[in-house]
Every structure is written in C-alpha cells, then in structure tokens.
Length: 130
Image 1 (cartoon, rainbow, N blue to C red):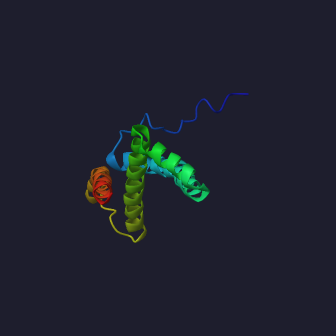
Image 2 (tube, rainbow, N blue to C red):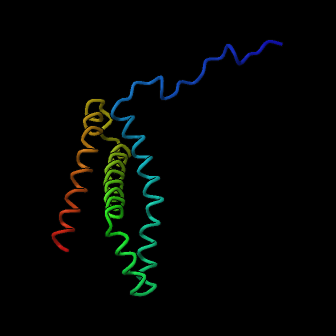
C-alpha cells in the first residue's frame, strides 16, 4: 500500500509567510495576554501582602521597588496597555469597522508606539504623584 501522506501538501507555517504588521501585532497580542495572565499573580501577591500585615506589605513594597521589580512592573504596565489597545482594535473590528488594508496596517504600526507612550506617561504621572 502506498504512503498517501507523502503526496499531501503540508500546511504553511510562520517560516513561509512574510511577517506583516497585522500578523506581528496578533502574535504580540497573544503574548501580552499570556503575560497579563501570569502577571496577575503579582497583583494577587501585593494584595495578599497588604492584607497580611505591615511587615509583609513593607517587604512586598521593597521587592517591587528594586530595579528588577520596577522593570517587571514596567513590563506589566506595557503589556496591559498594549493588550488594551489590541482589544480596542478587535472591538472596532467586531463593530464592522477598520477592515481596509491600509488603515489596518497603519493601526498595527501605531499600536506599539502608543502603548509605549501610554506606559511612559503612566509611570511619569505615578512618580509625580508619589
């Protein structure tokens, strides 16, 4: 009996396609969603530390105040902003808008720029209020 799977075409994978902005933003949207899923553990840790008493809260504040802690929080903030903007883009598509190729590509290019700008703005405001 002949092997029928040899003559079948294989499904194309990421190596076959040329990366375009909308494809890259789709992948980054999924990655930021996963990062937010696991990053929510940080929020739970902070809330548990706050509920556990002053010593636990001070330790958590110290941990988040270290250079690595601030980098992680900065990354979490960026992931939140980027995922939010991607979600708004998907919401717009759900409303039947923004399917034009050129507009969609421009929106995909602007999304990471705006997410970084929002993240920096949030951190500047946070330091000014502090």
